[in-house]
Amino acid sequence: MRKAGAFFILLFFGLGLLYAQEEDDEPDYVDPPIISDWDIYVPELYTYGDQAFIITLGLIFPTVFVNDGKVIDHNFSPPVGGTGSLSYNFFLSPNIFLGGEISGMFNSTLGNNTVFMIPLGVRMGYQFILWRFEFPLTMTLGINWHRYLNLGYFGFYMKGGGSVYFRLRPEWSIGVNANWCWFPEWTEDRSKNVDGNIMELTFSVRYHF
Image 1: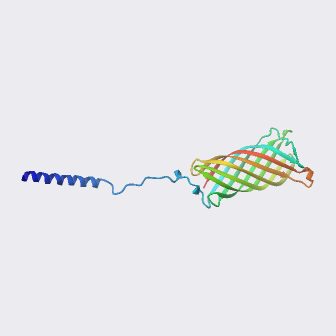
Image 2: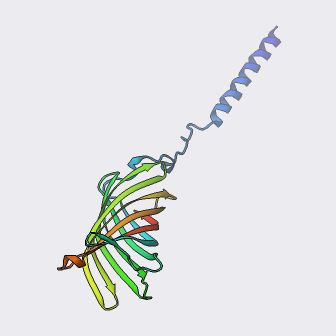
Image 3: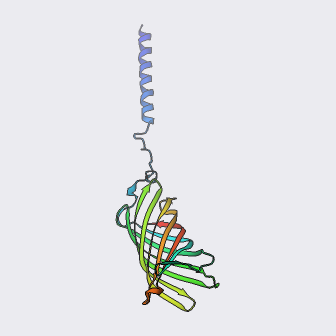
């Protein structure tokens, strides 16, 4: 009986030492799982002071030209030209932004000449956000310089439209834009006034910082 009792005491003592060693081998803490902020895409992605530069290239399509209340032929051939622009956005809130834009446009005429335009304006907008997609609506007001042969005109212009962007990375997004541009050309003789309307379809790359 004494030998049996001593055996059981040694057995329990050995098991106790083994259990204590296993507990000592375990770490005192467990690292929490790493959760990327980029995977949690929320509308508060933008805050006051966030900024973006936009590079845009694409096509323009002369549409409706009006003279003295009558629709006239715009005389662009082919009725498609090119455009490019540099834009800047400064966010006042997660959805509202202000900024500026400078563009260049060109289109050929029936006489194999080229019309050049350089619009410069202030832009404002409001954008909706859904996951990694962003839907900005923008309005631009400014001045426009026309040049055709030895003729020039300096006047007002307005542009409005919408875009769809996809955020590839925190710093970069790409998107497409559709804008309607109004270029009035007014003179002292109202019978010679022309209101030109041009459609833009463009592709953009945005850098966020």
